[in-house]
Each structure stands twice: as structure tokens, then as C-alpha cells.
Image (cartoon, rainbow, N blue to C red):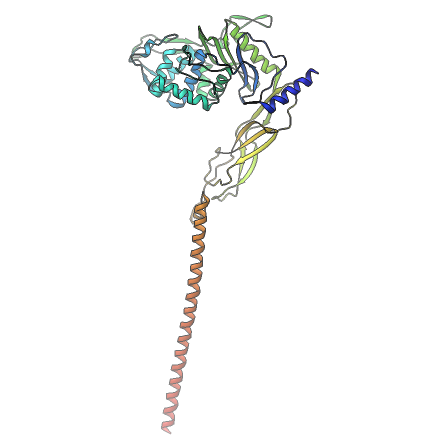
Length: 448
């Protein structure tokens, strides 16, 4: 009976899910925090949800969004000159000094490892000119990443009634951020240092506030005292204010598969216990079924404006689906979409279409289809017969037909004229010959 109930829950959720496919067990693991989520990092499947859509204060987990925007809009080697106001930022700081010169890269490490609020302000001003303009950029990008119930007013997470998010939104932001190689590199770094600068004679030393990466302190977990350090964790960001309490967004990887846990408003060491509870729950109760691998040929499509007649479309990356371990994946339908007017030149790896996976009418996810090889455009006079749009092609063909008909008509007229001219010449020759014969005959008769 229990298995039947579980199966019905899974089927109902697959059909009626609101954003991503959600799987749930009748007895999810208990956590002490009022809000949390566990998400498959590859597909966005929600494996656990406790008030994940409730608005909460994010504290310094805000800096995930700040960092990804900096990585998208600035160069790591850019020099940042600290203004007169940034050194007075409240909370955790690296104590930047007015007119001090630091690189974007150094400030990013300070932001994500030391959780420096002054580094966040300096980076925001470097990208957008002011905190207010940067906050607008944060809110715009959040919506683009699927964080619909988030509103930022600053780049560091200092308390503000209008600065809020949800566990789900933070997971979506983190899911994207962890696809950026430099971001992923920084958040798993345990120690970092900034050497003396033009204003600071001392070296600044940082240690990551994410204790999953290094701490030997113990927590009581499933009846045993174990170290906080958890080898499968690869980052990403802690947070704390007196209002938001303890917050953590973490990513863990096992057997090539990653999950993202978000815990908001936890108390004390419960932050680490709750986070590990969710991560272990995901790996112990779900399996990741591969629906396709990377570089798998999906379809051969015709190519225009090239000596090559066809081009293979292949999958850009693997695609997995998380399902409960005691269940089998239902029948999955696949559909292919691509531009029917694709023409050369084409670069190897260029995205040309998508392979979409569905369960009934429910979209489970999709994979980009890319060009298996580069295709060069046809050169020479024949290349003029290829157009990207249909209307110039139609005009060209009508014009070409008119020119061909005109040439045929002119050829026929010329042939007729030549024929008539030839006939006239023959007639003249005959008349001339008749006249010559007549004169010869007459002369002969006269002599007689």
C-alpha cells in the first residue's frame, strides 16, 4: 500500500508540477530550519522542499548573485580603486582603504571566502557605478535565472525589509553560478591571501567560512559525533545576520552527480546538520538515470550553400533524470527542433537545435544539439544562388527567369534575322548570276 501511494504521488507530481519535476517521499527527512530545499544541480528537479517558496532574508548568500554578475560584466585583471565611502561599510570586512588599488579577482576571493561586505560594495560600484544601479542589475538577472520571488537592494545581504529571496530562488541562482568555472574554483578554495597593496603594508589572510570544506569540529549526526568537514561538498556560500540567522547554500557531488541544498534561518550547528541531512537524503534515496550522453548523433540535416549535403546534429552534454531508487523511469518521449533554413558557414559545436524530453505533456528538460563538424560555405559564382531569406530568393528567381526568357527571345530573333539575311544574299547571288548569263548569251548572239 505504501509503495502504491508513493507511485501515485510521483505520477501526480510529474503531471502537475509547477516549475520542475518534483519527487517526494511520504516521510521526508526532518530538518530544524524553517525553510530548505534540495535540488538536482543538473536538471533543477526538486528532491526535497520545506517552505522553499516562502520569502526569507538571504544574508551573505546574496553574494552568489553579486559574484556571478561581476564575472559576467568585468575582467578579473581590472583594477578597482576604492572610493572614500566604501571603507565605512558595516559587518564583515577586509578593511579596504580609500584610494587602495585591488584587482577584481582579489575582491571576488574576499567576497566569497571572507564574505567581505566592503568588497561587495567596491565590486558593485566597479560594475554599475553605484549600489542602486547594481541592485537593478541583480533583480533583472535574478528573474532571468528563474528567481521570481527575489528582490535585492544591496550586493552584500545586509538587513533590509525589501531585501529578500526564497530557498528555491537561491538554488536556481546557485545552479547557474556553479556552471561558471571561476566561480566554482573560488567557492571551493579553503585559504587565500592578498599581498600588500599601495595602501596596505600587511598581507591579508582569508579562510573559507564554509566549514564543510575544512572543519574538524564535531556535529551530532544520526546519533554519532562526526566532523563537519564533508569531502563531497564543493562550496558554495554561507550567510549570517541577526535577522536571517544561519544560512547556507551548498553543492555536493557523488559519482559524478551534484545536488544543491539550501538552508535558511537555522540556529547554530543545526545549519551543518540540516544541510548534510538533505545532501545525504538525495544520494541515498534517488538515482540519476541517464537519458542521453554527450556527442550522441541525433539527426542528419540538409545543409544549404555548401558542398556537404548533410550535417550531423549531436548532443552537447549528458542529460540525467533523478528518480526514487525503488522506481523505474516512465516512458519518456523525445522531440527534435531545429532551424530548417540552416546554411553554411557553420562552426563545429555551434548550437543548431534542441532535443526535448517529455513525460506526456510535461517537459522534463532539454539538451542543445550542436554541429558535429565545421561546414564551409560554397565559393564561386554558384554561391549567388543561396539566400538566407525566402523573399529575396523569390525575387532573384523571377529576375533570373525573366533574363533567361529574354535571352531565349533575343536568340530566336537573331536567328530569324540571320536566316533572312542569308536568304537575301542567296537571292542577290542568283540575280547576279542570271544577269551574267544573260549578258554572255546576248553577246554570243550578237557575234553571230
